[in-house]
Length: 316
Image (cartoon, rainbow, N blue to C red; front, side, top):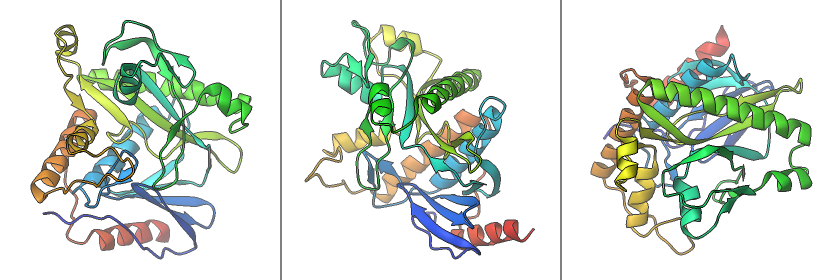
């Protein structure tokens, strides 16, 4: 098995604090910049799996930084540099307390809700007569509140966000506009690579100057679901399962093994063989989403490599 990085404990100069999310660890440098390290941790159903997935952090970081650059003409973002395959450095922002989830198709959580009889998600109506993986007439925005480690993200409506003053109406209008623009660009990029961007989520923050920017990551298999374009309609017409690129395959494996993050459920054991298949699926995701071959970084001593690259960046 390749070496993985599942937690970090760096002592970068001018360090003000560290935030540890489900997958990323974020170092605050002098209340000016953030060093975001994508670990190899795997999260599903808001639970972090016990073992890391080789190269997953590199894959997520490189897709996200690539996609940030491919959308910066539309929506400003936090990114300044990526000095290491697992690292993004960007402006310190105050994050909005909602994730902007946008869905072009009835899949995943939306499909599960629809199947249970619900026809409204986050205050948005879902048409009658749809079947799983059908396209919505227009993409729908279904926001979620951001959960702390170990807690579940929760659906919330636009009305609730405004009524509870989680986001101001003026700012929320910008978040919605940016979300739709990013999703359209992401869909166009996906289509050019023989994929369909099914759904995704975006996170936004405010810089010290009060500018709203895209933060965190974008269009990776952890935040997005992709289908293969070829054969999509045929599979829908025949009632077949869609061929997809996302971590839904991990969720399905967990469901099959009686785990959905519910109280009392135990995470099934992931064998080295299964972990390797997950790693290979992530590499496949990378190559399809970016349309280029994946080059494995040197993982003989990941911590040392990351530390050296970050320190070198700050010494310039």
